[in-house]
Each structure stands twice: as C-alpha cells, then as structure tokens.
Length: 331
Image 1 (cartoon, helix red, strand yellow):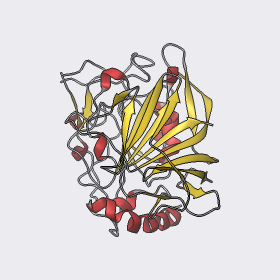
Image 2 (cartoon, rainbow, N blue to C red):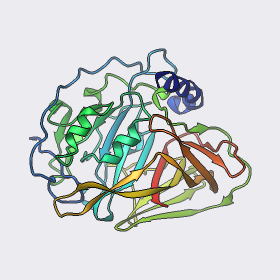
Image 3 (cartoon, helix red, strand yellow):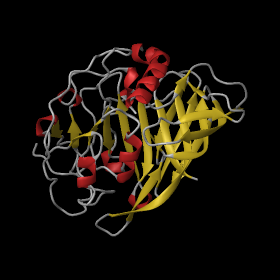
Image 4 (cartoon, rainbow, N blue to C red):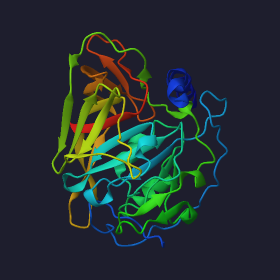
C-alpha cells in the first residue's frame, strides 16, 4: 500500500506544483442543527504530537493532509478558511442536509470552521491519504471507537483543546473553529494529495455550461461560470458562498460524482438514518472546467486508491489547476 501511495504522490506532485505555487469547548452535534447523538462528550484518546512536515510539494518526506469537517447549514455561514482548501467534498447527511469536508495540503489558513461532527463515509473517503489528520467535533457514540481504530490521526477538541476556540459572533454549536497551525507545523505540500486527480489541458469535446445545480433533499449547490475570473462561483441554497473575510468561494474545477447512497447502521438523535456515501467502486460524473461540462467515468477499485476520472473514450480527464469541489450526488 505504501508503494502504491508513493507512486500516486509522484504522479500528482508534478501536476499540482502549479497549484502549490499559486470560549469553552463543547462537543459538536452529529447532524443538522440538533445536539450530539448521545449528548455526551467524546472519550479522549491519546493525542499525537504534531509531526514535522515539509512545506513544499515534492519533498522526500511527505506529511499528512489535514481534513476538516465543516458545518454547512444556514447559521454556520459564512464559513472561514474554505477558500484555502485544495479539495472540498460535499456529502449528504441526515435529513437530506449537507456537510463539507475540506482537505488542506498546499496551505494552512489561520482558522477553519465552523467544525462539526464526522461520519462513517469520511473514513472510507480518507483511506486514499497516508494517515491523514481529521479535525472534527464529535460523532455518533458507536462510531467513535471505529474512528479511533481507523488509519488516521483523529483530533477533536477533547484530544487537542488548544487547537480549537469558540467565536462569540455565532451561536453554538455553529461557532467552533480550528487553528490548523496547532495540529500541523506546516502544510505537507501537493505530494500528499494522493487522490488520483490529474491536472492539465482540457480534453477535446464537452459542451458550453454557464451554471449547474446539484440538489440534495434539503440542500442545493449551484456553480456559475465566471468568464472574468475563470472560476466557478459557488452558491449554496440560493445564496452566494463567501468566507468570513468576504472572499467568494470559486473553484477551478467542479466534479458532480454520482455514487450509491446506502443506509448505515447509525442514526441521529431524531432517529434519522445516516447515509453512507460509497466512494469505492465506479460510476459516472459530470466535470465542470473552463466554462464547459464533460461527461466522465470514475473508478476507485479499493479504499486505499485514489479516484481516476476518464472521458468517454477512456482518456484521462484532466482538471484545471486550482481548487476542486467534488459533490457526491445520488446515482
């Protein structure tokens, strides 16, 4: 597995080098706006010291990416640090709402949040990275032992209280923020992004696209092409997505990845089932880049593999340099 991860790093590092250049703590809830699933704080685990990580891509020693679970309901917006992520994953959670996972490798913002709870789907998604650091604010109590045994570095407020703070400008539980620099000494660099993504010139074909909307039962994402900035402007639930410092969130590539949504064995406090987003397997996707939409196929044979995207003729589907959003839509 380490050899496979090393090969993926090498292939991605060169492609992403351009990107690299360019109060008191309360455990968060497990879904929507409600309380924790069991109402209890997370059992503290053994906290690991921040590992020394290089601050540039292509280094011989590659550190772990930082993955942060980010709240995405109305009271949590605007979010902080979302524009600095290399990849943003959007997944469906209980009640048809959405939750984000932001992946940081080429830069670490001063703050990220609001931070919320983890899901079973996150563990499968994160297996593609080499021992990633997962920042989250809790989970359903039966899932916590599974997180502790997963091949990642879990860092909740109970495990690393000095890394988190409460912002009084928002009401709990939508006001918990992370200081990434207290978990990682520096950004590990683009080589840590072992996702299988390829970056480069756009393939031939595609169709002009000015706007694309993806709907969950109780949430929606709209991506509008801006010819002046050459980016896709994000709106969520009909409102433009900006960060707390006023920056418009605008990825260079948007992937609508069609996946199976299965019922997990976990539920929230209201009895709503937690969907399991299956990211291992194969399926179809729509890739938005350069003001065009491309039909694509995706394949991820095993959890330790990245996801490969190809055009209908089997050629690699290159992404544009810059931030990537992946929205997991029901197949």
